[in-house]
Image (cartoon, rainbow, N blue to C red):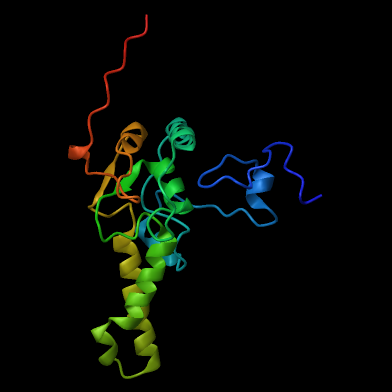
Length: 194
């Protein structure tokens, strides 16, 4: 029955935030889409839909799994559609990159694309220079593409690679971002194994 808990995952219906699930529960009748890391700027711009790729390179699988497991046990902060969502979690786990700005839309390509689309339609003074609908469409597409490109975590200047232990230690006091690296206390020195 559809009300029975998954034999692999158990009943997680009352849980909030990031959970561990099997692939069947994750997909839940949907499709699996591949997010691509380390793409070229040309490839990035050719993908008109945001949230499908980034110029940022992915870290080795063991680093990615360590971050994901650590955050699963310790939390990733409160959910926010534009600043701390599931795409932000995945991008952080894959890259270790965090955005340090108060006006950020987070790491999410989908959120950045939404903002880019809105700004290309609403704020372009160039739209008054176009004399046809096709000219307006070209200007809008160019603004949308440039906005997406400059907001990608792989090219932004306001990102830092932060170890997951420091991210969690910072306690995400602002609900969606961590303190700049200078304000985060250093990790304790690891004891030597004998």
